[in-house]
Image (cartoon, rainbow, N blue to C red; front, side, top):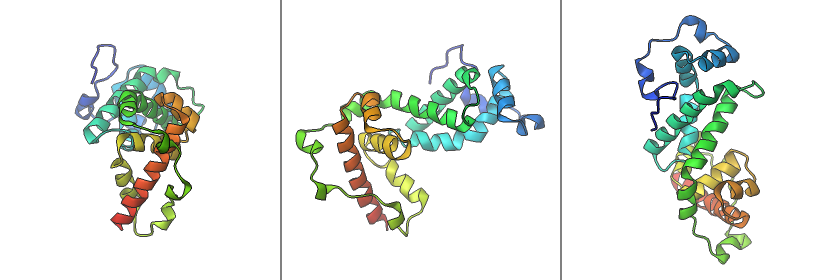
Length: 205
């Protein structure tokens, strides 16, 4: 992880700080944002405590493995604290941080995803019977943790497109632009990801 002096806080040192003062535990988002913008370590630690678990799960949907997800999350939080003065409250703080984590993760793995996506003409033109529609409600014996685990087991290209389209609301046009691939490739990867995920979920029952 980059540790240039301009970084406001070293995330690896967070656990060494004393617990935030009680006033920070009850602060509004805007008060936390203002304190973080001033470089207050206690406020930064509180933001980290509030959102680290959720952000790690988001990064795991894009990362190669758990260690890679930790690195993506740490780099993401550095960007959060370096840019937190730009947060205007037009969305929740969680939504704003989530967008930074997703963008950071996609940017970090873009080249690897492109290298890993090998698509031929017949890959793009998938016959209709080959497409397996993915319905979570049909998987009665699985809980959210089971499904999440299977998503993280997908190949990098598959889970990146699946996460962007199904979980994070990107269109195929936006995915194509972000990953520098064609819309047809994005659609192909999504169909294959759904098919593989459905198979993994059936096998897990």
